[in-house]
Length: 345
Image (cartoon, rainbow, N blue to C red; front, side, top):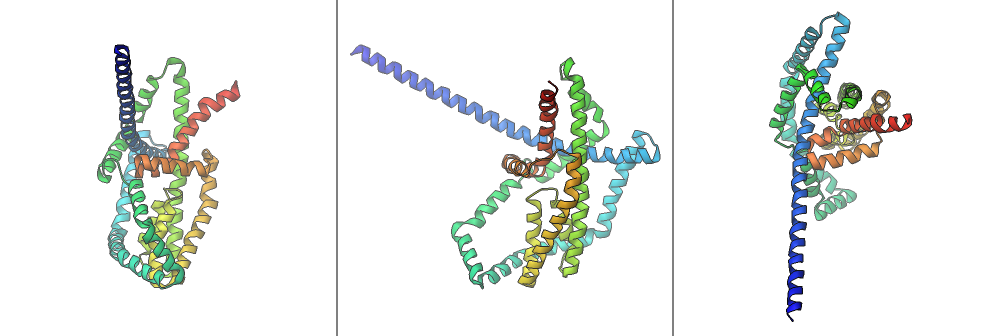
C-alpha cells in the first residue's frame, strides 16, 4: 500500500515537472517569437532607410560621372536636387492634390453606398451583397487589411525612424559596411564584402525598376482617366503609381476607389476603368518587369505572394511593401554562399 502511494506520488511529481517544463518551453518560444517580431519590424525600417540611401548614392553616382565632381559634392547636389524636386511638385500640385484627396475621402462613403444600391438593383449584385453580409466577408476583409497595413510603432514614428536611419546611412555608409565586415571571421571578410556589394547591386536595380514603374503607371493611369473623363485624375494617378511599389496587392487597391467612382457615373464607366487599369498593368508587366528581371534575380510569383502574406501578417505594412527586396536579399545570399559554392565544388 505504501509502495503504491509512493508510486502515485512519483507519477504526480513527474507529471507536474513535465507540465512546468512544457510551459517553460512554450513561454520561451513565445518570448523569442515576440522578440523576433519586434526585431524584424526594426530591421525592415532599417532596410527602408538603406533603400533611400541607395537612391541618393545612385543619383550622386550619375552626377559624379556627368560633372566629374567629388563624392561629397555629388551627394550634396543629389540630395538638394531631390528635395527641391519634391518641394516643386508639392508647390505646383500640393493644393490641388490635397483638395482632391479631401474630396475623395468625403465622396468615397457616398460612392460605396451608391455602388451598393446599384448592385442591389440587379439580381446577381443582390445575391453578392446578401452573401457578403451573411458571411461577414466585409468585416473579415477589413480585419485582414488592417492587420496587413498596420505599422509597428505608428506610421509617423515609423517614418521618423526611417528618415533618421536614411540620413545616417546616406552620410556615412562605409562605417556600417566596415562594422559588419569586422564581425566576420578573417577568412570570410573578402567573401562578406563581395556579398554586400552584390546585395547593394540587387537592391539598386530593384529600386530603379520600381521608380521607373511609378512614373510609368502614374502617367499612363492619369492619361487613361483623363480620356475617360473621370474626376480626381491627379489623386488617382499618383495613388496608382505609389501603390505599384506593392506587387500583386497594390494595383488592386488602387483600382478600388477608381472603380467605385466610375460606378457612380455608370456601370459602363466602371467597366471601362477596370479595363483601362488592367491594360496599364499588362503594359507595365511587358515593359518594366523584364527590365527588372534582367538585372535582378528572377523571383517566382508564388514566392513573392507567399512572402507578402507571411511578412504582412508578421510586420504589417512594411512587411508587404518590402517583401520583394527581402526575398531578393535572401536569394542573393543563398545563390552566392551555397549554389555557386556547390557548383564550384
